Figure 1: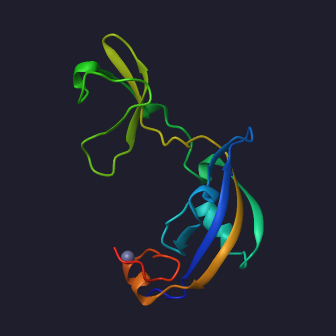
Figure 2 (figure 1 turned 45 degrees about the vertical axis):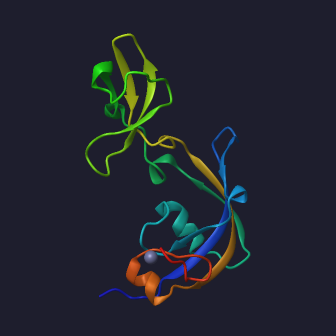
Figure 3 (figure 1 turned 90 degrees about the horizontal axis):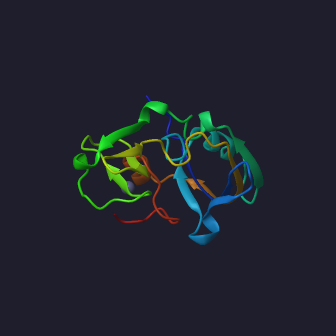
Length: 159
Ligand code: ZN
């Protein structure tokens, strides 16, 4: 049995790394909306947002291990260039491996014979600071609960 008391919370955020550089901000593209309790956002951020009320602002610091995880060295791999789906590649290109839900790999180094790929999330290993402002709190609709995710601000997003 699950207790269906989940709420839908919308919030603005500005995400910065430990040097203070802005990595992402919802001010550019509108508030982020999530359904409580289903893992739509990183757990460390959700647990803080659940304690806030409409209009509340807070600076939330989340250690890497509670955000996108520590970097894993075994996700940095060398492959022959002939194994890549195309010959013309450069640093920063991304590839999906064949297994579904596997991480995207980013090319971090290009040699004459081989390339180095990094499968870590771009934010892995980075302690994150979220400057948040709660812009909406409402009960989840029955449809959102059955879908297991939040819809638009009015709960009637069609998809
Ligand atoms: Zn849905």
